[in-house]
Length: 127
Image 1 (cartoon, rainbow, N blue to C red):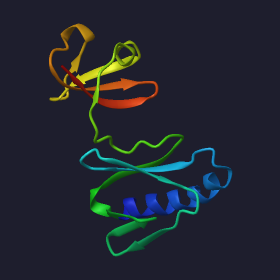
Image 2 (cartoon, rainbow, N blue to C red):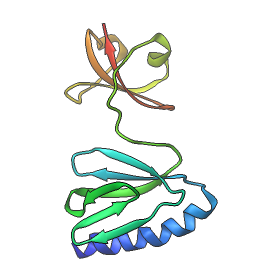
Image 3 (cartoon, helix red, strand yellow):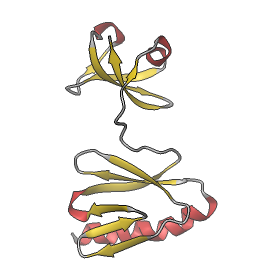
Image 4 (spheres, helix red, strand yellow):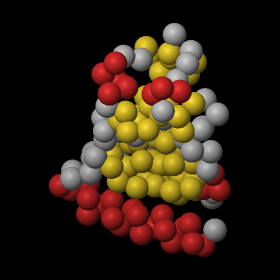
């Protein structure tokens, strides 16, 4: 717990350095279950209360927070599903099935897949 607290204090100090020039306009929090929540650093305030971190309007239990880092894009976990297009598949750098196994384009059948591209990560439905 001490290490997490020291890490968070260091990151808060770094927030002041990076937020001024907006080189990295988002601070992304990743929880132990893999959920990512990105928050704009513009006018961001952070406070600690017992075992809770408040960042803007978001609340995080420190025990469930695995890491936080600065990013150039919003990396919040995607919850929507979209139709897959040929362009999505052509830009794919990795494709995973719903069980998390890496698959190729040729192995894709009807179902839900996670496609990673240079533009972001998408949850898609193949019909």
